[in-house]
Length: 256
Image 1 (cartoon, rainbow, N blue to C red):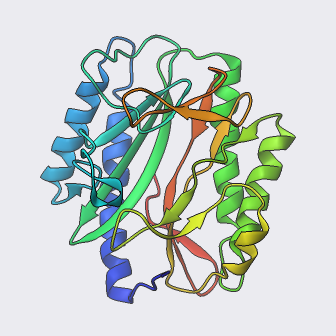
Image 2 (image 1 turned 135 degrees about the horizontal axis):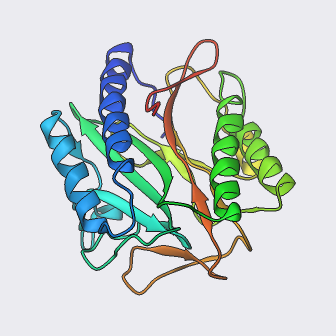
Image 3 (image 1 turned 90 degrees about the horizontal axis):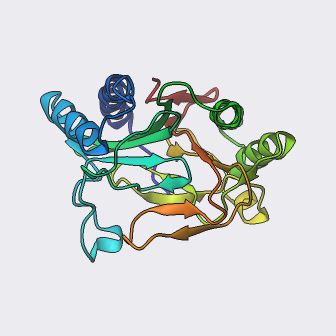
């Protein structure tokens, strides 16, 4: 069921979103050649706890079963789309395109966001996919308002990606967020008539996260059981914000 948050709950999510944004701003500045993904995770974890929050992803079990996610921060590099595990052996290299995905639980309510950063000088195509993916998110956010359908959002994302000769990942989607890190509805980043039936209402809280591929949209799950990668080994871009539907449009709760 899609939930509507109260004014008090939205204010808590606003506070949690500020914590999340501050942590990602700080951690993204540490994305440099030679730094381990484990260091970035440790830093994010310490900052979240120091600000009164809890990392939503740490020990998270999709569906409530299986082995929990082993980190606070997802660090996905280049062709890794999401859920990249931040190990000590994963060393950031010059030219890498790095995606930092973090969830924060604050006073029992969750927010979720992703930021991208380049390690030193990155290639023109990496620069382009980072820019275009962010533009996709910004265009999609403009479609979030009461009475609109989620398909309005998906159409905007897909149109801008295709205009720039990129493809939208189809096997992974955005989601509702708040009482849990993942709630209904699914938020497709492409046009799909099923989303015409999801009409936005004031008080809905959504994690909007376009995932855009340099090449084909197909992805696969790596052997670690968590990390999704592009099937053709080409670059992926991923930006994400948590938003709340307001009377006149929407508010970004994780503005970085």
